[in-house]
Image 1 (cartoon, rainbow, N blue to C red):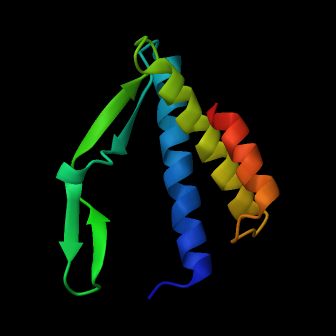
Image 2: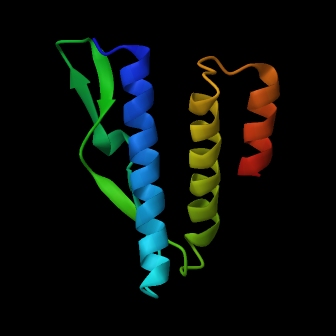
Length: 107
């Protein structure tokens, strides 16, 4: 099992990779998008080894210049930013104050 530091490093790497992709899209004057796993029952897999339900490989793209996607796109970037902040500050448990902040970002 990976240590907390390894998980933190991997999390920050993924966040940075997605962020740099958005910046690259903007610089190339492309419609920025992010690809995220589909969180639906059709994309849930039972892992017999761990006894846990896991997300499958299916993903969807959220586009900034799509009216149906733009709000969710920005909310996702805000949650990514908040998550990076929590990891950088070594906060591994979210207290009630952070939950309220997160809810404020999502609304």
